[in-house]
Image 1: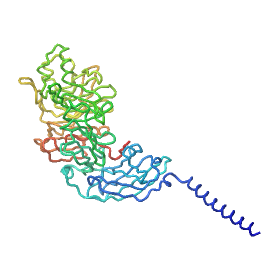
Image 2: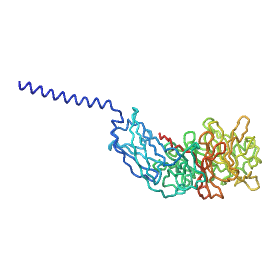
Image 3: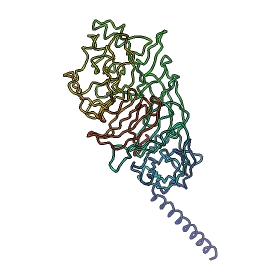
Image 4: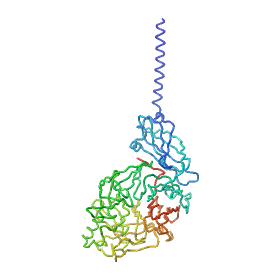
Length: 506
């Protein structure tokens, strides 16, 4: 009897234990991935500048994470939308953000206000759609460094309640890494370790900066960390002017020394993010061949060792598989991407290229309305395929002695052109002249942020001592106007709208 009772009690205990274990397993099966993730308190450490911090928290299973995003609450009274960034799984994986051994994930937040208690919402989204949300306060100190000039603009007109079509600007400059400024005039990001970012861009996952002295392409992560790649062709040197998206890589502009011959600012090359040169276009050869085929002697136009072309902007036209290249000395030229053949030329027809060379004159577009581009910078193609550029109004600097240098205006403007390649005409369909009071003879830029809303950067006003960032719409209404001291183009080489209020890093 006692034995039977003992067996009964053992069986009862076993069944109770099994029942408890089964219930726990069943409960766990019904939990979301967020609930099972084991996320703990968010810890933080300062980044390379006050605009960056490093966050981390415990995490059991990185494979189940779809993305991590954060939102930085705007300062009181700010008009700019909140900085909001999403890190997708693949981007985090490439950065080795998760430590399996430590069971934790770490990632940067950038776009913080300096000298401010930043209030962040950090959301981890899992593959089953569940989310973990954490509120994090990140206090920052003040900033002092080469980008300090951007922290104290002369706000000639503050942004009002209406949107200028964008909330953040990426400024390429000759002082430091690229900088990000919001439309309230607040400096929101800068890196360390670079003294020039004229030839740079945000390449989708990081900032890429061409070196002006060495055949190097730098990659600066959003946390400010820097690594460099050597170009695969050591003939290329001096990244200058713009770096822009190409067909598969980045379009860079270079000087080249080849067999003892120096070609100044007349070589374009496409490079990938590792520095491998994909394709090269020698503008000296292209124009020599074109002019020779048209019966012209090119020797007093294409001149080795002389800055005869001065390439300052080049963009890829995906729809036409073509390149649009700005020659400050001469014109805008459209080239076939594959062959380099010249499709058309748009420029001041009182210059040497048009007056003295029938082979180039035959390729010219006729401007039927408005101003011709003169000394232009910052090409871009709009959604309707119109061409937008900054029309400096500066005659050529380096034409041969006794040849025509072209027009000189007393003011600069953004200019937008509708081009009819069949009729071989161009019309200036929009411009903003600012009462013809602003002359920025070199550098400078204009980009469309939203339909009929523009960011215009005047790099070298008042004898190249002042830069201004102005948001203007198609009717000429100014949304904001910020001024900064400069030496030549150092403070603002060009400025583009930058989507820090919805940026996805993939």
